[in-house]
Image 1 (cartoon, rainbow, N blue to C red):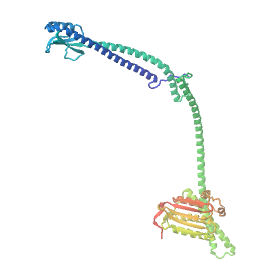
Image 2 (tube, one colour; image 1 turned 90 degrees about the horizontal axis):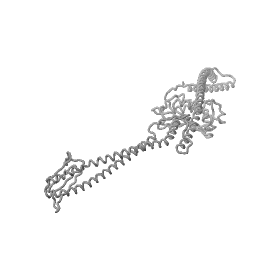
Image 3 (tube, rainbow, N blue to C red; image 1 turned 180 degrees about the vertical axis):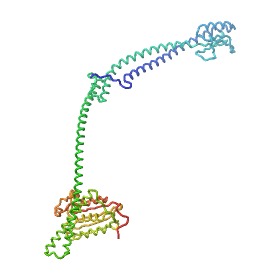
Image 4 (cartoon, rainbow, N blue to C red; image 1 turned 90 degrees about the vertical axis):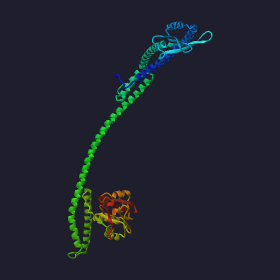
Length: 500
């Protein structure tokens, strides 16, 4: 491909060099001409002064005899002949008292007006040494100026001719250098604009321009490779974007399906819980009547044992259904708290009484500690009771016989209220804690597997605490025990303190 000539923007190096050399030559020539003119003027003026001084001295001597003889007419005649020489513009002769004896003025020359002339004076003496007068000569310098300007014009013409010749020579010489450089620069600009198919000229010679061209060629080859990589990268990026879009669409469909499945599960659990509650309430009601022998003895004592089993199983089942219904409401965002003032001491004492029988049967010691500064809490008493009962039930269930279970409540300086249940039971690993917080999961522990459960207790407590705007933390170590702490935000602490 033939490289088109590219006009470079701005002043090229060639033009700048030519202008610089031409300006230098002109400046040096003008300076040389000025110095030459000054030297010529100085020489001409010095010569004129010397000649005029000699003329004044000689001519003054010729006037001594006429002045001694008072022949002023002869003095005037000699002044007239002196003026005819051409260099003299004016002459005057004065006596010793300063009186003008003779005068000659060429054209309209006026000694009182400043001009281009030199003034010379000579005292005239007689042969006996007596002073007889004074001669004044005015000599014009116009001839010197004319000669000097003629020399300057000749020098300026020579300098101009030299400048033109120098400019032509420099221009031709610079073309030999800047021509290849301009072609390489044009190729460099095109390559810089992304035209990597542009051929690089001036290669194959052993000079600086050729080495520059070789370097540009290597750069062009690298640019071609980079351009190829960029094209491949763009293709790969386009394919990746398409795959990401497709995968995102698949994930969105899967998410929608999961949301729909979760909603269907929640609705199913809610409906099933309501459907199961009615017959279970009937079973629990009738079993309680039979336990109380409302219509008389049942007969065989074994019936009493069966009724106890029926009532216990029904109670467990209704508790499970209640938990399932609560979870479905919480997950669906439909659970509404019944806000009311709750006394923490009364709440703790009530829950301890509910688990006291089971704890006593297992040989556990129950201990409660409530800080006197704990304020009344704004919350749902039924939910708070359910949370504390779940935590106490877990502590009783997973603590070996003869263990210690402690319930504490306190507040900090910012009125955050804390409630904790701790035991010295079997404890859990960190993985076990994570597993216990998931629904329908239990920690991997032999003791945990001895006690059948739904695995909803801690998960439900954690979700309830989120409804309160609080948090639940679990600290546990395997074989050392577990401490579960729930914290309520300051806005749930009422101003009045614990009820008396």
